[in-house]
Amino acid sequence: MEKGSQRRKGELPPWDIREYKTLDSTNLEARRLLASGAREGLVVTARHQTGGRGRMGREWFDLPGKSLMFSLVLGEVGGFQAAAMAALSVLSAVVELGGRGPDLKWPNDLVYGDRKVGGVLSESCAAEGRELVIVGLGLNLSYLPGELAIPARMPPTSLLVEEGRSWDGVEILRVALRRLRELWKKGGQAWMEAYRSRLAYMGSTVTVNPPYAVAGRPGKREEEIRGVMRGVDDEGNLLLEVGGELLRIVSGDVAGG
Ligand code: BTN
Image 1 (cartoon, rainbow, N blue to C red):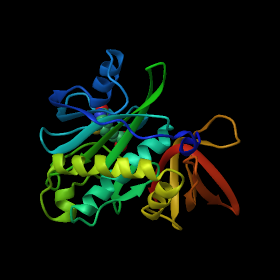
Image 2 (cartoon, protein in one colour):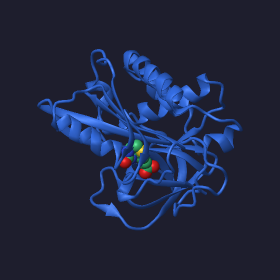
Image 3 (cartoon, rainbow, N blue to C red):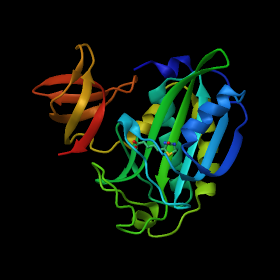
């Protein structure tokens, strides 16, 4: 993964927020808008997606009005950093608005224990004559237990269930966008420290499910690997201790135990 924190410079432009009732996918709409002249700072939101997309080719499901779903466009930053900053900003917004807040499961899931409340899909896009990142985030707001019955590795949950009260997605987004601007201004490694401080499974045994890649070794691995989670490096690689060796896992999916 790339050293995005080194490439990031300058101020973020003002947010250009476009709100939709229904879209196939906010990430896809952001890509279309970029192709027709939108720029860095674009934020696309939808109350419902008919073709929501997740990491590793998965789908992202929602019921109308029950999730916060948005995509924002950033420049001068790598995919991991953009996604991590977005996840951290939403987490901080929930805390600022009085919640306990979820933790972060590497690379960018938002979790309460072993239950997933949100996820991030970052994709690159060439526009304005440079490489931009489209960061799409989905957060389950008001699902009741069992309401979001989806096939998933991790059982889904919602802010309503975990925090015991209802949440306004528009308010969370407003605070999260301010938080993101603040993180961006801080620059350097300050935001990475905040990211690390909310990482789930630190010091615990985890399983990395295939396909994943190990830095310095060719190809994708097809067998699961277990080890102790020791952290995340500045490039966004998972530091996994296996048999006394520290492996840098470049991409993959982590589960507790
Ligand atoms: C994951 O956990 O696999 C990532 C899920 C990302 C879902 C969000 S919802 C808003 C944006 N639009 C999409 O189609 N996907 C992302």
